[in-house]
Length: 114
Length: 112
Image (cartoon, chains in turn orange, purple):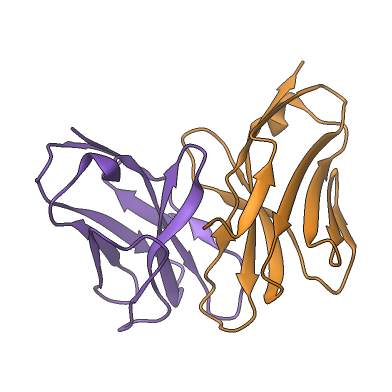
C-alpha cells in the first residue's frame, strides 16, 4: 500500500531547464511534506519541506508547490544544473504522533544534461 | 563530524545466514530508524526507536529484529537471511523536536 505516489520514475532535463517532480497522497492526516535528495552511494539528505498551511515554499532554485484540495505537491528545480543529477524522494508524515515516521514516495532519478 | 555511521558498507550472505547491521550516531538524537531502499519502491521503514528503551515496527518488519543498545546505537538483525532481503539499508536519526532526518551512507546487502 503506497500512501505517497511519486512520478515520473526518471527524468532527463537539459542544463538550464526546469525539472518538475510530482507527488500525490490520500491520507488527509499528513501534516509535513519534505523532499530528500540522494546522490549515488550516499544517504538521502533533506532538501526542502512544506506544511499544508502554505501553498508554496522557495529556497534558492528549489520550490515546493502544494495543493491541499487536490492532495498533491510538487518539486520544481529552476535553472537545473548537472550537479542536481540525483534521486529525489518526496515524503509525508502524519500529525498523530511525534515519532517522526516518514512515508516515502518511490523516488525519481533526475539526470541533467550539460 | 561523523553524524550517522553504518557498518559494514557491503555484505554478501548466503540464504539462512544471520548478521547484524550496526548504526551509531554522535548527535545526541533521541529517535533512530532503519529503512530499506529497493528500486521502484522508495524507502520503506523497517523498525524505529522513538527514544532510548523503545522500539516499534514500521511498514516491513518481517524477518528483522532490532536492538536500541543505548542512545547512540541502534542495530538491525537478520536471523535467517532470505534473497528478498537483498537491498540497501539505511539508518537515520533525528532530534526529538526537529523534523529533519539524518541518514547514514547505507549498507548494501546481497543474499544469495
